[in-house]
Image (cartoon, rainbow, N blue to C red; front, side):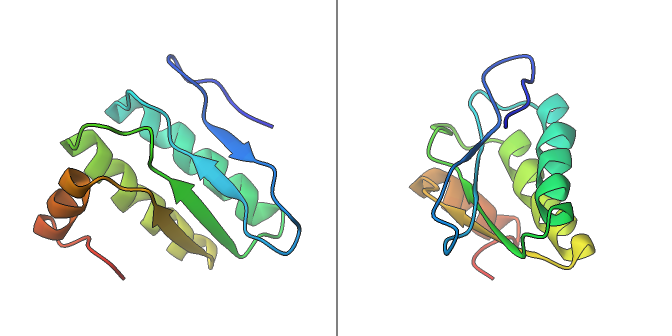
Length: 105
């Protein structure tokens, strides 16, 4: 159940049915990868999921492509009527998201 961008995999971890699915965000991440991430997120909501956890652990570097991805994933979730939670963001990414006004919801 994963789609392959140019580098790495954007996968969804199998989870217990009582838990929310986890969308794994790959590294390195570029602006070109963001639409595929959003497409995968939309597919999860289309399958009846109401909340998705995005795992950002692979992203060791905080940059504007990552900020764009987080902003677009949140917008995609809102438009689909779902919720998205980010987990395992590094300190640099958390600081950059705060600076961009995309800190904790």
